[in-house]
Image (cartoon, rainbow, N blue to C red; front, side, top):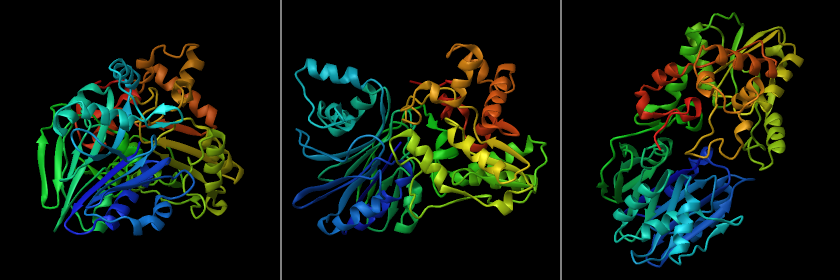
Length: 467
């Protein structure tokens, strides 16, 4: 996915920019970058963060950064920020999202004798494509609007200019942005969790497609929000940090609500409730408190030398690293009927190994409850699961095994409680060797979040969305 942070201050902003960007490290694993503007111009740095933390890669360079305004990014895709010279002036740009029609945009640029200079692995940098679209217009505002109308998918962005920072949320608000204020400084962030320790208070959540301009004294709207919003539901279920809020709704509270709803629909008898670290913990606490069953940690996460379970690019190595990070606590497992809660099942490979470890340690039963419905449709908007083939999704792979056809009756499999839906879940349960398996009903997830369904993107579960 990725995350953005920007700040304009009356004093030097580098420390705030460094920590504010770092607070988005849970959103991406590939590259991190920062850029500042000062009286000498722009200064930026980009580092690969696949094998190390953002903090450790940038700490030694902080002495070379100085300025009162800057932008930062954690990216799962391309190297950023970019510094662009144009008729609009020199500006820095960072983006988050996914451009589904990038090939078409590039070919149209080539037809007009345009070119692109920044590539990664032989692929044109999508952030440069966005910058190109912006620079085709006579103002930043017109350029951002044109880019948002052209892009199919999603794109939220920050522009670092001479006078301040433009912050633009993607057209349908699938990715979040929030403006924060403290005396003498204004910040914009993908995550509200970046604000408290830097002394910022949440001031405003820009709407879908809205563009605001930030300076040290505050912010002002440059383009109004659109009428339609489809913010990604998975932000609350998995992506988001527990301390963050989107549209004023706290992540941890939603996870607690998800677990409580799952518990209210459940009648299985267990001795202990646990969450798969880390995103499953909030769901499990909600389940345990609703059922009044003890919460425990039969799996603990070893983090000192394993910063990310999905760090390696090779899937086999990712699975191995994930396995090595979770250590079983035999004394809490042996002879117990265990209930595990988690956010979702994507491929299921890691979970199958974890279940076997629990039985090897003497568990009598291992039950699993997932906080969202079965993932059937690959994400079209935020790169979640999009780097995998459709059949890497456990739900979609199971459908093919049951039907002999990948795309047959998908809407029936997505319908909670239908004959096909129950057959799919039972097949997944059997593959994972679980005692029982249940998924959250979509209407219960929507209720746990608290926004109307039409304002949420639920595409990966039911295939519905605006494009």
